[in-house]
Image 1: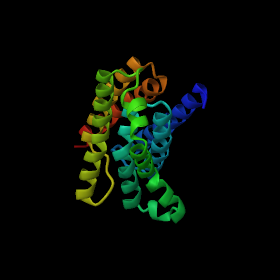
Image 2: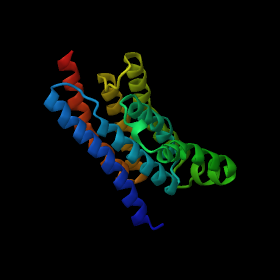
Image 3: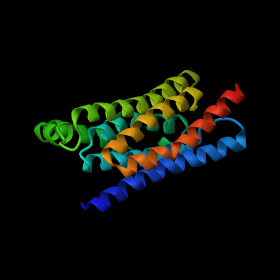
Image 4: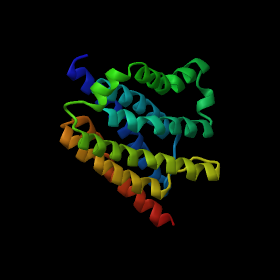
Length: 206
């Protein structure tokens, strides 16, 4: 696949992520509080699938790593909101199995994976660790969101979620600068305003 097509795929993924933030922000402003709309999680899942493929084509371990955990938390939120059961079974199985299938491919081609992803000449070890740390922090926000929501038996986006988002996003943008990756730089920078505004709404509500 050409580099233009790969970048187009990455920007499409970030488009879904940007759309989810914009819609959530508008709905929160109208409600004068932080809301967790269905479309937020639908766009999250669609963007995650595309970004996972983008990371695979870019041989970028940190991007793939960042999608694994949050992917299933998106599904959990869609399930608790009653959206997931309404999706045809064949699509649910395919969506649910995608990361697991990729993991099986990685294990079956371990040597190739190590050489092209973990020993990528364009991504030195320190940068790989730095980028993975950013993705890990960015992923933790969804673990926190899941735990917070699980205890309340409903889907919420608490203030802590947005604070962690701001920190993780800043690291990913820095990683994107080092990698000269416009998809990461532009895609993550868009969220700064939304994260900050949700923190303000959450604190004001409290």
